[in-house]
Amino acid sequence: MKAFVIDRYKSPLRQTDVAEPEIGPHEVLVQVHAAGVNPIDERVRLGEFKLLLPQELPLTLGSDVAGIVIAVGAHVTKFRPGDEIFAHPGKERIGAFAERIAIAEDNVALRPKSLTMNEAGAVPLVALTAWQALVERGHVAPGHKVLIHAGSGGVGSIAIQLAKHLGATVATTVSGPNAEFVRALGADTVIDYRSENFADVLGGYDLVLDSLGGENLEKSMAVLKPGGKVIGIAGPPDPAFAREIRANPLVRIAITTLSAKVRRHARRAGVHYEFLFVRADGEQLTELARLFDSGALRPIVDRVFPFVDTAEALASLGSGGTRGKTVIAVRREEAERISE
Image (tube, rainbow, N blue to C red; front, side):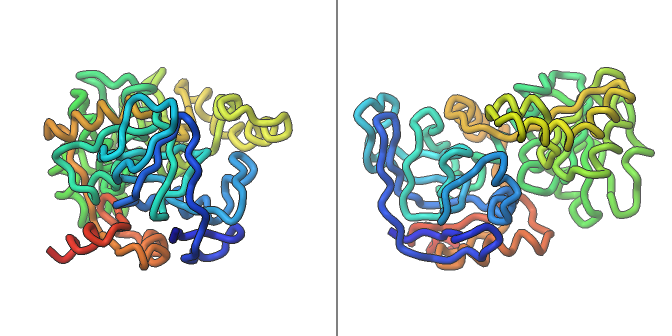
């Protein structure tokens, strides 16, 4: 089958023939119709996670998938051939930039009925990230104040909608041209990061979702009320993540050292810092599918590329300016809908 792979870290994506996936007893084989493109795909290509999450090379990239189940393992009970699904395959088994992929059934959910394949392929990773940050870790509830950085991006555009659904007051940072776009998603306060310093404007927040890292992460702590929390998805990883992935002692020491400055800054500010590396979860996707079908959430798809242009689709993330998500239409019928 055809797939887009890297032969070594930092090498360009290339299309090639790879072996058909073998499905285990608890896995489903999916004919991929659409695959979302995420910044993490580029970070994997560059080798940023090779010490934390080693992968065998050559490696097929891709962390979002929507498609149709074409075969199931002997012990699969939740799905059958013909089911239309969407999924984040999980950090141990990425590979959505391919014609077919095997996925653990616990990581899969039925596709929201209201979404096209291209829309469904856009949302698993970003929707799970928003859910795990705001619901699972942030415990966002009515009356809470939440700051979401990069509100026009893939994670931000879903997180704004989810936070509003949960009853929060939402602030976000974007460039000026995206201000009305994020207000339409539900943002109450919009900060143009090019002309305003959000730390000078905001205060008393319960939660910050930071996707930028670095100085932006540390500045975010200043807007939190005592005991508030900043959740970072751009790093640095923290000791809890090292325990989660069962890192070896040397990696644990490295992670502890990398995050020491940020954690120290948080303690001095009287707030909490947590690193979030999204995990695959079919049950959470099922809950999110209900929110999409109810209209509480809507997917934001900015561009759709045909499968042959997968490398170009990944490179396009570097140019910035994307609202929501970029998607690869793997099946011909999905690609044909681009021009409809």
